[in-house]
Length: 472
Image (cartoon, rainbow, N blue to C red; front, side, top):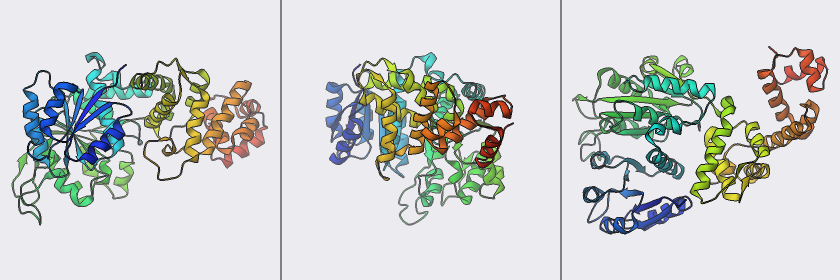
């Protein structure tokens, strides 16, 4: 399968080189340094996607989009702008921009956005929503049931889940299924915007509101009018911004900085967090009234370790995805490799699993094997801190994790869950993990469990107490 094609239009050669470097592995990328040249290249290159800088000399991004619309079957464009250039972004979205990113941006976030765009654009209609949320476990089906029930309404929803569980994918799905699905989708990462800019970015400001405010700037609420505003990591908002956000949700109006006007906005707000906001409310770090406004419906996205039955489905999906993307015809994943994947605790959740499979697909020729998976985690141990984001060494795996997988796999092959053997081969972490799994699944009495593990009852009792575990 041939690679998707991306055309980068930016007047900065360094940006073009950077895009070619970070995207060239997955896509066929070409770059031009002017909008006029971009129009010519669109005709010959026929890109599947355009990355367009809005601020360029002579012909800017807005004029480019106007010209692009006149073409037959114009390519979709993701526009790029600096923080604060919201009027141009709004205009670009009206002219057909499918999404926007702000400079400076995170490479991994950009790649995720592009992958999501292609997955949505390629899916048949019946797969557009549920097809991209992979899983048959009761936990994920319960999540899907809530989404199907509440997505069509305008009710506020908060998604709670660890990093890497795919919260933004769920939010985009909710948006597409809602009455506002044809409107803009505006994601805001509250954790990465500098605190001094959060209020002006959300609500905008008037000319002369502060030093440097030379023109009026609308905020993200105005940008999301008739659409969805996604507040990711909403727990990071300061108390003053929380108060203003609460008023906006109550009154459905905004007051830009430096203005006495109240501007009506029709926006559905969906938020997400990876912290315990209820505890933050109890501790006084988050307003209770705002929390209840945001969480009319609370959707908990389970970590991957709690829906381990979905691991084979996800793994096979990623093998197929990256096999096609990199032009490899793979048999799939060996049984031994799949056992290793199902044994891992996945602290990085689905994102970590995707990285493991992606790396393995790049390394193999025919089939992903046990050794490929273990090699990935060995890279995680060897690499120093501060390496590039998204690569093996940033998954949080340690030598205990590798030892655990080796030891547990050996025990499985031996046909017995022998606690001493696992401890000898895998270490203390493996011992704890095996006990936790058995306690979660077993209905055995303590004496029966001790016998199965090859220890006496006293040893088991001491071991459980030492590890902070108990037999129900």
